[in-house]
Every structure is written in C-alpha cells, then in structure tokens.
Length: 431
Ligand SMILES: Nc1ncnc2c1ncn2[C@@H]1O[C@H](COP(=O)(O)OP(=O)(O)OP(=O)(O)O)[C@@H](O)[C@H]1O
Ligand SMILES: [Mg+2]
Image (cartoon, rainbow, N blue to C red; front, side, top):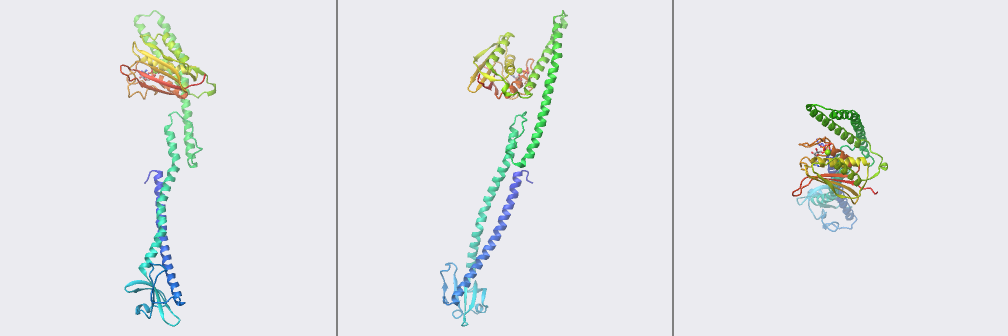
C-alpha cells in the first residue's frame, strides 16, 4: 500500500498508460499487419489483371513493383507442378521449390492457366515491417506520457507542499489565516478548517493572555499594599532576630513585584496590535540615555563602568514606554551578569534603514548550549543568578518582533575578553 498521494496517483496512472499502450500497440500491430497482407494480395490481383488484359507476358520474374517483393508470374505451360495447378482459381497458400508462397491462380479465356506468386516470408517481412512502424510512435509516446504525468502530479500537489511549508515556517504564535485565493479549489475546505482552528486558537490565546494581564494587574494593588506594610515594619524598632526576617520578607515581596511587572509587560506586548498610524516616532538614543542615567543614579555600584561607546540620533516608530522596557531589560541583564569592577558599553546609532542598539557586558556570557533558549519565557539557565524571573529577554524579543526588528545575542569571543553582546536592529523612522 503506497502511503503518498503522489505515489498512488503516479502508480495508478502508470498502470493505465502502460495498459493502454500495450493493448493499443498490440491491436494497432495486428491491424497494420493484416492491412499490409491484404494490400499485397491486391497487388497480386492487379498483376493478374494486367496479364489477363495481355499487357504482361508470363514466365518471368517481375521486378520494379517492389524490388524486395519478388513476385513471379508462372505459366502452366512452362512449369510442371501438379500440386500447384490442382488448386482452384483464386488466392491460396502453396509451396514452390520447398518454400511457402502466396499464390493467385487464374484461367485465361483460351483455357491456359497462370499463377502470380509471392514468397510468404517476404510478404510477412514486409507486413511485419509496416506493423512495427505503426507501433513505434505509440511506444515512443509512453515514456513521454509517463514524464508528463509525473510533472503534472508534482505541480498539482505543489500547492499542498507549499501550504505545509508555510505552516511549518510560521512563528509559533502566528495565528493569521492562511490565504486560500491562489490555492486549488480542492484545498479550500481544508484551508477553511485550518483557518477555523487558527481562529479558535487565537481566541484562546488572547483569552489566556488577557487573563494573565488581568491577574498580574489585579495582584499589583495588594502587593503594593504588602510592600508598604513591610516598609513600615522596617522603620519600627524591632529585635535583631525579627529584622532579618523582615529583610527576607521585603526581598520576597520585591521579587514578587518584579515578577508581576514582568508578566504584565509581557502580556501587554501580546495583546492586540495598536494602529500603526497612532504610534509616535521616538528617539531611541534619548530613551537609552535616560535609562542609563537612571541606572547610574540608582547606584550602578560595585564599581561597574557603564557608559556609551557611541550615542547618535536614531528615530524609531514605537511607544516610548515600550522602548524603555526594551533597553531597561537588556541593561538590567548586563548589570546583573557583570561582576564587580566590570564594564558595560552601549551603542545607539543609525545604520542605513536600521536603528541599532548594542549592549556589551563583561560577564561570563551564556553557556553555548543555552544561548538558543535565553529568549524563552521563564528560562534562566542552569545556574540562575540574582532575582530574575526569566521573562526579561522574552519581553525584549516580543517588543523587537512587534516593531519588525531583529535581535541576536552572541558571546564575545575575543582574547582576554568575555561577556555577552546583544544587538538589536529596529526599522528606523525619519524624524
Ligand atoms: N548579559 C547576560 N550575561 C549572561 N547571561 C545572560 C545575560 N542576559 C541574559 N542571560 C541569561 O539569560 C537568561 C534569561 O534572561 P532574562 O532577562 O530573560 O531573564 P532574567 O534576567 O533571569 O529575569 P528577568 O529579566 O525577567 O528579571 C538569564 O537568566 C541568564 O541566564
Ligand atoms: Mg533579565
């Protein structure tokens, strides 16, 4: 049982073509052979007619009608063959000098008899030759037909293969309907079903994202209240043993807050896409400058040398808060993974059609086997450090995707240097 549709179609059509070819070829051969025999008989009849009308004299070999045909005119008077002359007038099969012949006997008005004869082997050879020439085109046609069939099947099934390829190439969260317009009509019900499924998935995902966003949003208020209470507790004169616990409590609350903020930021990126026309044009360099300034004001501390290696105007069509979230998350990582006394360099500039943001730190970089996974939500690597929740780079990736840009993270591999280099390219907007 052939599993592939293409294989099944080809096998079926091959059988049909071969059967048609063989049956058609055999019939055509039979027919052409018989026809050629009949034609040669009519030649014998014509010659006999000529003899009867006196245009041809007997007793010699006839040449010229067909060089190979070897037709003889035999007179009863000149050749004494009882067996031959015992035959009645008309066409018959006989033997002459041990060779099978086809012979036409006739009687002249004066009562003498003659025969027009032709060797059967010659006749069969001529007929076989003609029949073969009739079958030849059919035989030549079969491989051509098979080739055409293969091409037609392949090209008919190509839209299906392309459809599957398109689906495979899609990003996991791309739920846009498949285009049915250029597809063969047989695929339309199939495409409609897939599109229905995609739409249900999209609704489901939207619901889920909204739920996450709502939940994160709802949890913010009580967490803020909790955080205030813990803050208040810290300013109360507490026994030393209680102080440690309060500090742990505050740290826990701050982590939870961070998780909620990150979840909310991620969910916001996922919900709906704003109308492009209403998105403002924002200076990426200004945003980056502010975030870096904030980080320095917050006390980069630990002696980290943070600064711009290049800071040039680069305009991007995006919400300022979105760009801020992007830069902040990248800088946050660089700060977190750079050891004491390290160095962080940032670049913002325009390169052709792209606004570039590049951040390099002097940490230890990402383990090579993990570098492909750092953009996954909640991925924090084998040895998670600090208070991260593993959502920062997912947020950054979603932002970059939505802005139609690209991002890559590579380990810096230069002698005497290590760290992570993150390169973000966004479509530049004119100011
Ligand atoms: N600059 C960097 N140097 C080394 N490792 C990094 C760097 N940036 C990210 N990583 C690795 O990638 C993982 C994912 O980063 P991501 O920003 O998504 O999460 P996070 O920083 O752990 O948490 P969050 O940003 O949500 O607080 C990190 O846990 C870390 O293992
Ligand atoms: Mg992070």
